[in-house]
Amino acid sequence: MSLTSKQKATVKDFFSKMSTRSDDIGAEALSRLVAVYPQTKSYFSHWKDASPGSAPVRKHGITIMGGVYDAVGKIDDLKGGLLSLSELHAFMLRVDPVNFKLLAHCMLVCMSMIFPEEFTPQVHVAVDKFLAQLALALAEKYR
Amino acid sequence: MVEWTAAERRHVEAVWSKIDIDVCGPLALQRCLIVYPWTQRYFGSFGDLSTDAAIVGNPKVAAHGVVALTGLRTALDHMDEIKSTYAALSVLHSEKLHVDPDNFRLLCECLTIVVAGKMGKKMSPEMQAAWQKYLCAVVSALGRQYH
Image 1 (tube, chains in turn purple, brown):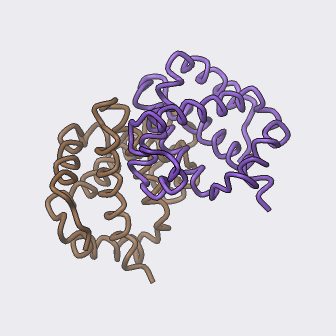
Image 2 (spheres, rainbow over the protein chains, first blue to last red):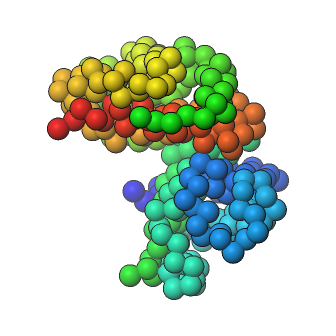
């Protein structure tokens, strides 16, 4: 399910529209991940407070969203472009890849919330595919 | 049986109060057919689904979106007996309609995104959690009679 060139353009266009709110979307998405899927808090046991809306959760959500934006710029070669991030996730963080899908869902919900008019079914399918490809690239070095 | 806190029940009711079934039902099913095109396999008799515009303009899709969302709402009045409430519908989807139960999850994902678009930030993280727990319970009940 790789992206067509039209879908790549759709992703770049939507992310560009989103850029003024990207921090908010990142922070909200991670807050929702830990609220809707509480088992994901297991990765943040070293934080004082891993509850939705807490400072460390919001800050980390912004960091993750920064990584996603970086990946948009590497959309023509996600595997190559995300090699070192994949190594980080595989050998150091060891986040179970099932969680990438859960976070992607929360990101889509936030995008729909904050850009209801722009998040059409066409944008939805393109971004969903992109996030799935991103997750695959992140999991590349796992085994 | 699924355990609900008072807060969760309130959250689920609050979300349903914001849903116009005649609007959200069609939107959710259209989105599902567009975002997950393999789901179109169950709607061969619905006529033209060949383009996104055809799907959005298709009156049978819209009508069925209302049917599906009405069915999803049934659990709201039976939150302590969701499994038994959907037993017959589960048999129907398995024995007559032959729907892969994973499709229930896909439709519910699209529904959540449509509802999020309508509610904006009024759907708090806790509200989203309760709403998704509700949909999960219904999806599970609908898949229960498959064998």
